[in-house]
Length: 319
Image 1 (cartoon, rainbow, N blue to C red):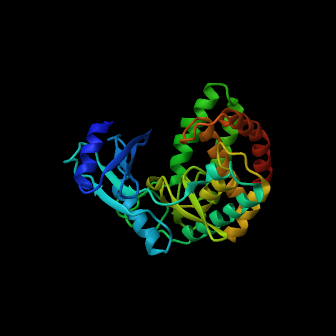
Image 2: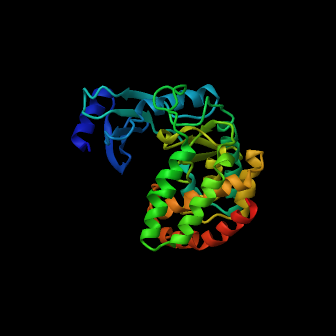
Image 3: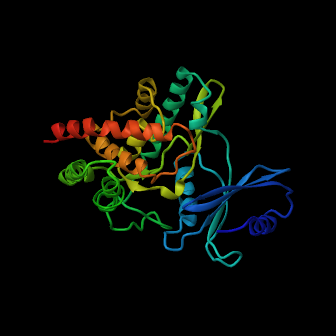
C-alpha cells in the first residue's frame, strides 16, 4: 500500500508547476489507484503495483496505449512509467484521466434508444480492437511479441473451473457437485473448439465500468477503456461474451442487437457460451471488480438460475 503523503510527494515532483486541488484514493484492486485533480490542468491517474507476487502491469499499460494509438484507437496519454522502485518502493504508472463517462453510469441516465446507440459505438470500437492481430494467444508483460507459452484456455480451465471459482462454489453448495462436473466436462470436451481462434488483442475486462464514452454532435463514441493491464492476445469471443452479457448488469435485447450491428460480425455462439459459463462462475465468486450496487446479489441469483438451462443447451449443441 502507499499513503496519501507519499503520493502527494510524487505528484509534486512530477508536476512542480501545477497546483493540487484534490487527492482521491480510488481504492485497491490489483493495484492501488489515486486520482489527482489540479486547479490548472486536467486530472491524472496514479496506479501503484502493490502485489510483488503478481506480474507488474505498469510498462504493459504503456505498451497497450502505444498499440492502440498505432491503430488509431483512443488511448490515454501515459506521462510516467517507473518500475525502478527508487522514488517509492512500488512500480507505478501515471496517465491522463482522459475524456468520457463510464458506460454503467450512462445506461442509468439515458433512455433505451440512446443506450442502444452507445452499444453500437461499443461494437464499433471492439471490432477495431479485435482486428489487431497477435503472434499467439497468451499473456505478455513488457514486450507484446514475448508471449508466455501457457494457453489462457488451459490456465482458466485449471484455475477457475477445476480449482478456483467453480470448486469453491461447489464446496459452498452454491452449485451442485454434478453441476461442477458438467461445467468441467463441457470445457475439457470442447477445448479444441475454444483454442480454434485467431489470436487478437483482447481487452480482458470489457465491463460497463471500464468503458468510457462521450457524445460528439449526434454520435456516441468510445473515448477510452480502463483496466488495460488485463489486455492480452487471445480469443475475441472472450470479450464478446462479456460485452453481450456483462456481469452485474441487466441487459436488454435491443442493446445486444445494437452491439452486434456495430461489431459487424455474428458471434460464434457455442464458443461464446462456453466463455459465458466461465464468466458466470467467476462473477458469482467475486473474481471481477464490480461496482458497488444494490443489484449485485440479485444479478448473481439470476445468473445462477440460468446455469442449468445453459448447461443443457450447450450439451445438446456440442454432442
